[in-house]
Amino acid sequence: MITNSIEVMKYVKASAGRSKLSVVFEDENHPRHNGSTIFLPKITVHTTKKQLLEMMSSVDHEVGHDLDSDFEILKEKGIDASSSPLGLIWNLIEDSRVNYLQAIEYEGFRELWEKTTPALLEKIEVSTKTAGGVNPLVRAMMKWETELSRKTFPLCAEQVRDMKVDDSITEKLIPFSDRLVDVQRIKPKVAGTLGAYELARDIFRALGGDPNEEERKTKERMEKERTPTKGKGTPLEPGKEKGETEGEKAEGEAETAEGDWSIVRITLEDLKDVADKLLSLDTVDRTRMSKVGLLYDVDVEETGWSMTPLEDFMVVDYCNGTTSHSEIASLLSSVDSAWFVTSLEEKAHVEAQDNFANQVRKLIQIRAKSTFEYGVKRGKLDSSRLSRVALRQPGFSERVFKNKINNTVLDASVSVLVDMSGSMSGQKVLYATQAALLLNNVFQVIQVPLEIIGFTDYGNRPVQYLYKPFSKQKVPREQLLDYFAASSNKMAGNPDGDSIIWAFDRIKNRPEKKKLLIVMSDGQPAASRSSRGLGSFTRQVIKEIQASKVEIYGLGLCDESVSMFYQHHSTVKTAEEIPQKLLELIDRKLFHV
Image 1 (cartoon, rainbow, N blue to C red):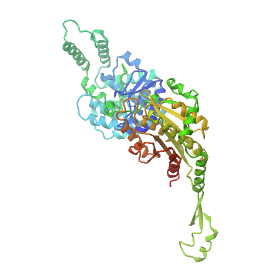
Image 2 (cartoon, rainbow, N blue to C red; image 1 turned 90 degrees about the horizontal axis):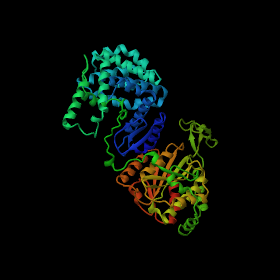
Image 3 (tube, rainbow, N blue to C red; image 1 turned 90 degrees about the vertical axis):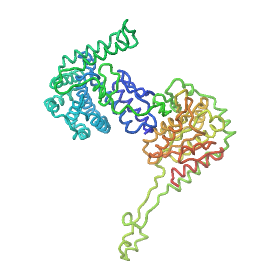
Image 4 (cartoon, rainbow, N blue to C red; image 1 turned 180 degrees about the vertical axis):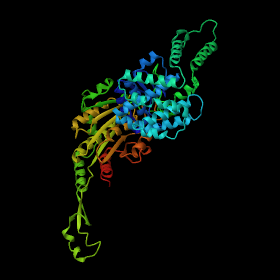
């Protein structure tokens, strides 16, 4: 659901902020975490609601590791979860501990984890059905851990309840059940990580491995990888061919994979194969995100357009005199709007605002009058129908009551999004300004919350002009004219889809029963950067909003392109039409005529 993208962005940034991490949305589909920043793929029209939830859940889990895991200990001990059997066991135990601690502290984490993880567990169950390599261990530990965590994550436990596992491995895990439960409850980072480390070593030993030898081999391999002569881009030693060097490395890896295992034999290929299926974290370099379905089957280049990251939206809040980016701070400066006012009076001859407001006031008086339902069996006694009692006819004589029905037509909020792109310059921007002035005045009269927003872009970033927020009942006419005059000095592209989502995110959680988003535009979406895919992106955004509780209406200004995007739309061809079109829109959408 692309319309939920801003909400998701706010969530992951707030979650990452708990451990002072930053979040970057990028074109690459390579989720990773470098210790200070979490990198996520951009959200596109093909990103599903399920994937958005998985993104939120994965970031929560990653932040949990940052808060509760001490990775320096693992470097010191020589544990690598990405290519070490011992590291794999530790990783499953530490994931269990982190998830439990986050779940008891944040109910939202527990609910989100329960929504997203059962599907992942199902995938792991299917992909580990074969008996070879690491699969038996993964299945046995997964079922063992989820059963011990059933009270916290019941849906996860239920998902793998009937999964078939190697009983010989399970028998060796059961004696460690109480210790796993105890480790889950250790909050301090160092103590908790050490607890998971010691438990992983003991389980590894019980399965027939030698943890000391495994750590020694892991440290040797890590040391080889850090050796400059083996590094990427370093010239090979004289007489060495590229194939020889790679062969030596493969030989070293094969040696690392060998262990004194009596039950499970694991190779590096097995570990590589399962790495993308487990909730694994690279504990040495920390360059991979925990994987909870983040690797979408979506190529940003192929989709052509992706949702702009939240921090890239440039917002000019005129009423508060603030802007989110210094590059556009000049738009807050006071300007001489006399030319704008003169042009408006000369070219936008419309009927007076007071007369228009009076028309709406009369309409409301008619619509808002309370009505009565007569001839009902319960309610307030209706004296005009008391004679029915004497007739003693079942089903008729009892209907001597009436009920008052209160009209709720004013329980509404409206957001008006005005295209302020370059093609709107000239008379079109004057029409849009006149429409905003009319709505600003009318909605004060009818006391319906109103927000007026303009949109364009600056470079590759969307710009949102906040002329009148919901929090203000009315903005003085002169000020609103100044705001439009100032923003008309910077009119560029119109990335409709992104801007519609931004406005939708502000109105969708309003408490009113009826929510209406009016988009005033003079043509098709066209951003300053490449507009490839922007049209289909905008259509998808509008389609999702039309299926929500927010009504969306396209008002075309001297252009009928709105008919290509909006189910409900109309076009203003001359300035004189603006009042009538607005009155029709208010009547049809707010009063259900």
